[in-house]
Length: 68
Image 1 (cartoon, helix red, strand yellow):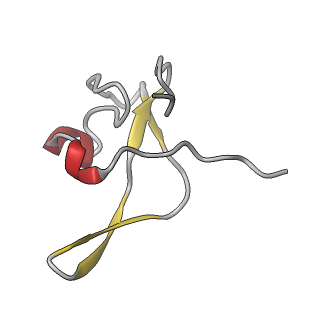
Image 2 (cartoon, one colour):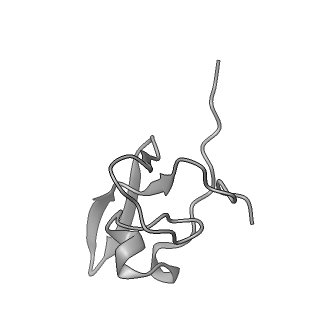
């Protein structure tokens, strides 16, 4: 069974808190240990010719869940 990953917003459109996994990448709500969900898969972005791994997170009850 294949699970579809949500399309992530472009990293340049996110706040620093969203980029660091402190806020949901979709709705921007502040995350806690109990509300944060790691978005699986491998995620990379390029900055200054360096490929960097990214570990985005969303809220457990996100109203958007990757939907625009």
